[in-house]
Length: 156
Image (cartoon, rainbow, N blue to C red; front, side, top):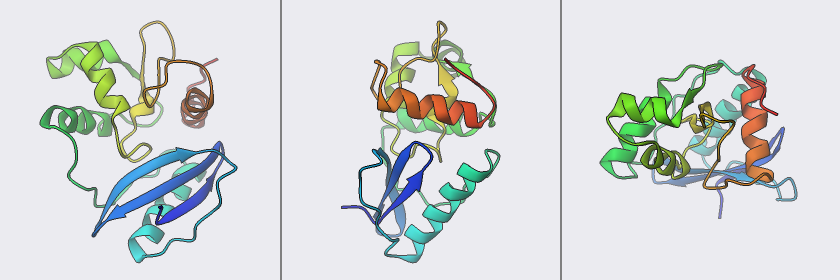
């Protein structure tokens, strides 16, 4: 199912490949079994994600599968331009893209490459906001809190 599953400070991260590109990165509970990277690209992705866990300013150099609509890809490109330690609101990003906050939120939730494309850096105007199409507190919101705190932005 995954080409690699690695430990993360908040659980596990699963990596799926499609040909010579990363197809998906998935947040998983700690109960998942680790899977040793089965290709050089899976190993490279695992190493780059681990480096991010050690240093929030780490950058990614991974081939990503061409997925998503044109609008989603525009949102995801804008997300890649948000530096570590900075957050923007869904509304701010929507204004920058000539869109509306709900559409930006949907595109963030549909992000197939979290961490590499840092959707966690987008928050609600009234708080942390949702994450990965999960609005309620729980595993995914806790992952977002960890990622933001790792970058020096605490959210209760």
